[in-house]
Length: 292
Image 1 (cartoon, rainbow, N blue to C red):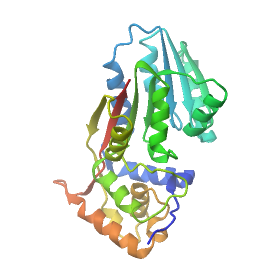
Image 2 (image 1 turned 90 degrees about the vertical axis):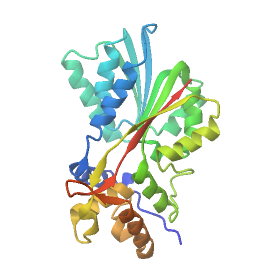
Image 3 (image 1 turned 180 degrees about the vertical axis):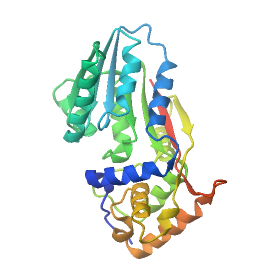
Image 4 (image 1 turned 180 degrees about the horizontal axis):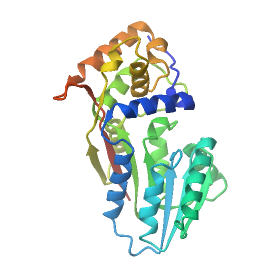
């Protein structure tokens, strides 16, 4: 039996509500860890031979993670050209407002921005159709590969956009969080995607098939969430956390009961009780760097 889900990210306001509740029960510093990790990775690379860096940011939403990255890069080279591809126009406006605020405070004087309200597939297609295929030193896609219509093809295309000596860096869920996405994915058909990416391990399998000779480095981060409320049927908090973990809107209501029962059994088997007494679920993620 399969079903067509109400995919949570397509309901932006509901997505944000659930993300905020999830963050309150996340044991770690989600997003903050993304920022620090990426900045650390960038600081390990030498850009002294670059007077200019060309960066492509894929799916940055409101720029929460990007702003400190731009700070770090703009302090190391003379000039940064920062291209943003984000399909949500409201998030683009928030991104622009954040940039304007930094510029008014005297930052980003050596950074120019080029913003596109497109999906990454649309950006790639338009670049080729207009005979305007740009190249970049760094491409980063943080926790957005799940939403690429054809994830394998997107990475093949993006690799063509990378300059020699540059790289793509992407972050994805791993461990139990990836495993429960894969378990749920065996029961449903997502009409919006050609090839769905469950998480880091799955993407690495795709990359090995597509790029057998390319150097790839994986950097793990270990975190977990307090999910005790998820097992209380009438708990709004628990249901919001569950929606976010499964990325399905109103999962308890919209997933067929027999499938939901199997998924919850899988979920419970992956939970454990920590020394602090909290009922935990592993929510690891990994950075994957693809070198050229």
